[in-house]
Each structure stands twice: as C-alpha cells, then as structure tokens.
Length: 157
Image 1 (cartoon, rainbow, N blue to C red):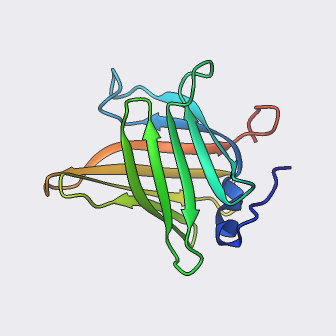
Image 2 (cartoon, rainbow, N blue to C red):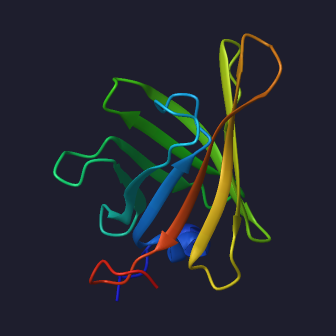
C-alpha cells in the first residue's frame, strides 16, 4: 500500500498515488492519427509527503519523458503544478479536482492549454482530453489520454 500524503492539503488527490497505464490517442503529433501510444504514469510522494510528483514514461527503459510536481496552498482550492519534460519545456499549471472531474490549465497569451478528465467513482480509471490555443485563437483538440490503475505487479485491475 502506498503511504498517504503528510500534507492534508493533498488528501483529495491521494488516490493518484501508484502506477497507472496511460494511453494517448487522437493526437496529431503521432505518425498516424489512428495510432495510440501506451506508457505509464507513476504518482509518488516528494519531500516526505509534502508534495506529489508524477513521472510519465513512454519508453520503460528510458528516463521519465515528463515530470509534474503538484502542491497546494492549504487556504486555496486550486493546486499548482510545475511541469518539465524531455524537450526542455517547463510550464506552470493550475489544477483542480471537483466532483470526479480533474482539470489542469494554463492561460498564457502566446500558448494556453486545458485538460479535463472524468475520474471513475472507484478511482481506478480516468479519461480526458487536452486542448490548446495559440495567441488568442480558438481552442483546438490536442490529444486524448486514458489512465488505468495498475496493480503492484504491473498487471491491470
């Protein structure tokens, strides 16, 4: 069993902790629009449970392709996410979890993004979509992503 966060401001996202299979689909950046990419996301505790870290892996034998550090001011309902990836991109997002809807977003005049996922009642699957907007243009679909919790042995639920 994964240890719970020591920071009470993170209690509502404690179910993230563990290993998830993630499947990307409907992505223009994949070689074939009908193709899917399967990887994994590992959520763990950082700084003795003060923060949550997510590491996303595409290649199981390579370092994480992206890292998120998630924290929250205990007086505010929203989380802050620091994001960095193997491309050298780093961003700051806001995040919320309300009524089984996980949202992540950033509003930047040059490039904005938003993500919304439905979290299953049993907290074992999450299914969502990323959208993007460049320089005040219209929102465009970026890609879909599904998460399925894996057992400790790496097998599905």
